[in-house]
Image (tube, rainbow, N blue to C red; front, top):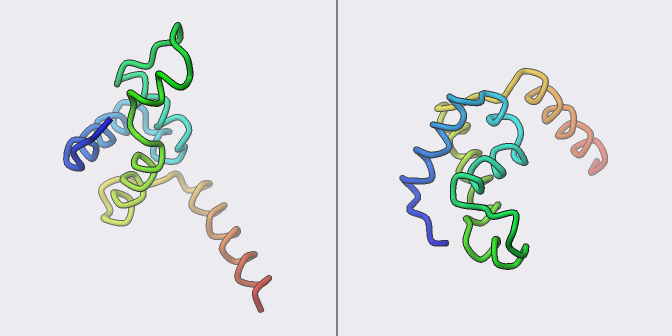
Length: 93
């Protein structure tokens, strides 16, 4: 499914308002968007994936909204990401 970037941004903002946990949980956000786009549990995985937005598009758009300061991840998520970053940085040096 081809998605207009402005449309995806507004849909993500709407879902984060309805379900704030979606700002920190990509799997939840993707599932909410896919259900909104008509995910049909009676159809095959392939058919459903042909119809819905790419999970990477949803994740990248959410990330950009966070970078722009329009949505904020939860404090535990921010801390976990920072710790992952520190650990990855330490393993490089």
